[in-house]
Length: 146
Image (cartoon, rainbow, N blue to C red; front, side, top):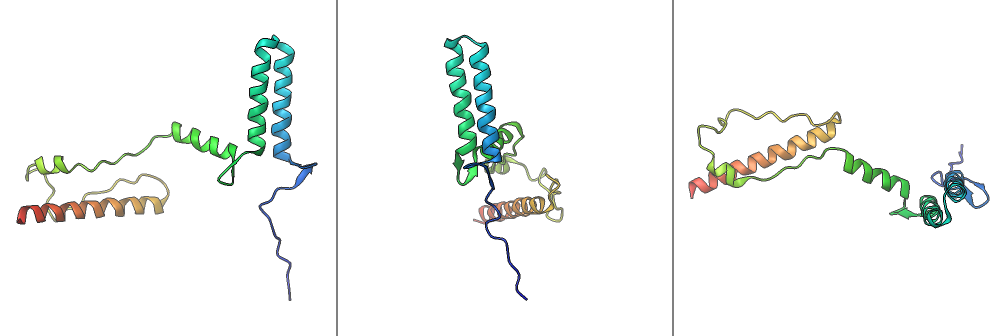
């Protein structure tokens, strides 16, 4: 038995002539806001603002960056600036200065905090940190033996 498999499922339907629904909404919204600016503000102020709004609407409707819509890129940039970030520094100098009394005994394993709900990311992070700790211990042992 043969079945027909849908093709091109990621292509949006053209509803309003050559425009998709999203493109039409962006263009209509930008044009409407530009018209309101033209109607209620003096021409000296309204013309640059209306052109900026209409240009932004056209960019939202048609510009793609790396085959992704501009609104997705803007959302990603906003989330990057708003959310907190995790920075890790490799502090070799501080470890050398640390006395032997402050170091962990070789039998103890340092607990790695859970950073997110995603278990795969948490596991990858903990493996990376444990690998760095192991490599740092090996380097310290090589330095002390030479």
